[in-house]
Each structure stands twice: as C-alpha cells, then as structure tokens.
Length: 264
Image (cartoon, rainbow, N blue to C red; front, top):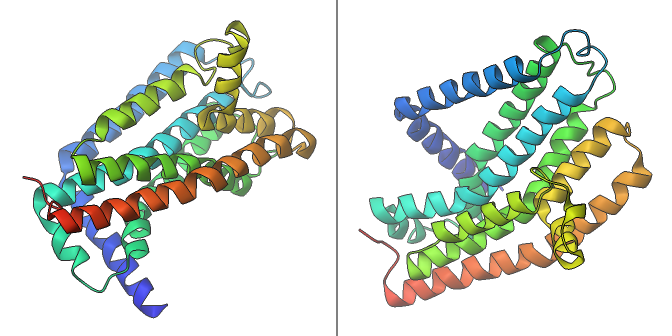
C-alpha cells in the first residue's frame, strides 16, 4: 500500500509539473473561463429572477457534467499518446510499477482538477448569480459527477487501447463525444426522435448524468426519481468498465509482443 501511494504521489507531482510548465495552455484555460462566464452572464442574467430561479445553477451543473465526463473520456488517450511520442512508455512499463497503478495515477490530475472546477462553477452560481445553494448537497453533487464519469473512463480506456495497438484513437473519442452530445438532449428534446434513437439517447452516459443533475436540483434529492437513473448508470459501469480494463490490458500485452509501445 505504501508503495502504491508513493508511486501515485510521484505520478501526480509529475503531471502537475508538466501542466504548470505549459503556461500558455494555462492562460488559455483562464481566458476560456472568463469567456464562458461572460457569455452566460450577459446572455441570461436577470437580477429579478436569480435569487429564486435555479436555471443558472442547472446551466453550470450541465457544464460541469460535460466537462467532467469528456475529460474522463480523453485523459487516457492523451496520456498514452504523450508517453508514446516522448519515449517514456517503455521505460515506465519496464519498472515494477503495476498496470493498475499506471492507469489510475494517470487519471489523478484530471480527477482533482475537475473537482476543483466543479466547485468553482458552484461558487460562480452563488456569488455572481446569487443562486440559493442551501438546498444543494455539494458533496453529493461531486460524488454524482464522479460516479457518472466512470462509464466515460471505461470508454476512454477502450479508446486508449486503440492508440496503443493501432496508433489511432482520437477519432474514436471524437465520435463518442459527438454522439454523446447529439443524443444527450442538450440541443433538442429526445422526444422528437424515433423511438429507437430516443431509447439510445436516454441510455447514453452523458444524458444520464445530465438528467441526474436535473433531479438533484429540481426534485431536491427525491430518491424515487434518482434511483432509476443511478441503477442504469451502475449497469453501464458493470458492463463497460471490465471491458475497458480488458481492452487496455490486452493492448499492453500486444504492444509488448510487437515492440510497438513507442511511436515517433
């Protein structure tokens, strides 16, 4: 256990140093936050409604949900691709560091960053849009975001396995992202789709996450409405996560046999 924690901490410190070294990227993220906040503020702000209306809170929670899930989807592909091109993939796997330590440590920085960003979204709601957060269980919201991101972690592992074996995978993430947004009900109601597509949309992990956020806000933790959504998400996790682990495991074995771990 101590060995795992030391290695986990080492991966986290490494990733933080890498992130801080790309100062322009950090600057772009800050500019994006300012732009996003400004658009929502000037487009939707209404001081007469902000104290009682939860629409702003739902908007920011939806942004947090999309942010959390898509970051979970893309992080493994990004880490694998970076390790391949820098030549650190082989050296890392040649150490006595376990496969699972590498997998979960690579997600650590994204995990903590997304929690901080989600809390930041809630603080914006409270102090700039004067939303009443007394009825919002922030810890439960964060736990729900984490729970609903697990199917995307599984899909991200599958996509990363394609990068390891075939040196492609970003296309897979792009298709998953496009389909998730299209069938999430963000741009139009799923009721307007044919029954088969409507069912597909209702079962997509992103739609389940967004619907869960709505229940948390509108129904004040009404578990009669919340439990069906959590049950479907749990089933998807039980189906997708083992497949994701198996895909990445066999991808590592295949790449080791063929000597194609690195790619320049």
